Image (cartoon, rainbow, N blue to C red):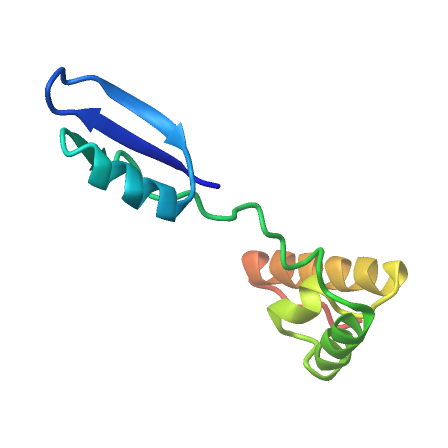
Length: 108
């Protein structure tokens, strides 16, 4: 059952009650000096992590896509590469940047 906020229009007192929606409607009908307040947005479910909920079939599909598109961000994130392949790719990328920054090429 949800919490509802109310205000007594005679005294100005604000209070909160735990009740069903039908009880709330009945309470407001029987107490005309009480008005319902909306003090905040209703609470929503948060903290959902889609990465944690992926089943193995979806992960396999992402790896297959990453294998076919090696230069993409997905391949960097998911890519079905071994640790050795990932390190080699990192060294190659670092070397290419170094060569680009120095303006020379290596012909060996």
